Picture 1 (tube, one colour):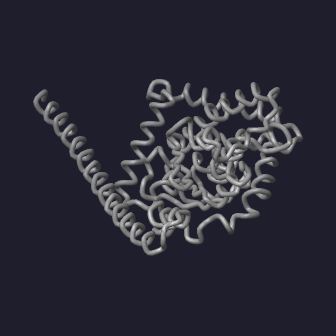
Picture 2 (tube, rainbow, N blue to C red):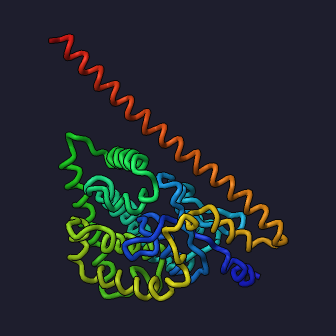
Picture 3 (cartoon, rainbow, N blue to C red):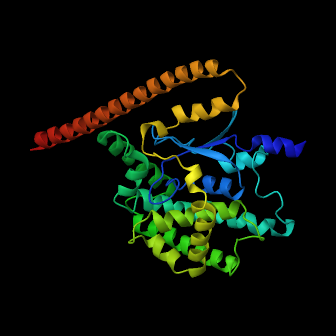
Length: 329
């Protein structure tokens, strides 16, 4: 019975992620590990790209019929899929490996994830983040959203104008420690734990591929990773074996097209899972399409208002300061 249920789940999954670029199936450092996790599990799934919500923390997410696993719930998409017995790579993990497995996973999810966020939003010129998240939006909206995210990352990392140099050194020091530990752990093995991939492999492989392929050659993080030949070989080998071999059947042909957002294609896929008559599914899909288009318009309108308010407030503040200086003179 369990096997029959597992077979029913195959072919029913839809991963909604950020769009592909830099030769990666999805270029978002949060989405790529989820994509790899499903590949490692040999799960049959479709991928659709959401370009309408660049600042949403619920992306990536996985749909399975009426079930949805969001990134901002239960520790992330992968943990949701495991907890709800949808896709679980770690069910056969030897009990003796669990303590080290947990600590390794925590190290990748904190130290290395922080380093990627720092390079993507703080230490770079913004072009990479813009290509991944904001290139489909009007320029002013993309600029203000980038500014908001940069500010959020600085707050998350505890970076201020007074401690910026010290914080940067600390971030890279932790990343180097993590790479050293992972290189030692991997050795000459194919995977980090056991003889099969686990969640830890999915998370680290997503990190490594993003650092190697999305970050520029001037990246401090990339240069640190390149010092560990076995980690680089591991990443490129698994990329070829698990991602490139089946990429043609999983990635939409036009990822930059407006139809690749999470509105129309995602509902097309989910309508095929239901046993409802085709005409009814079409009517519901058309209504959903209208609702999502209206929401997209509202989103753009509110962001435009936010830009105008932001500029007016800053303009007003500058005017007040000028007036104060004039009175002092």
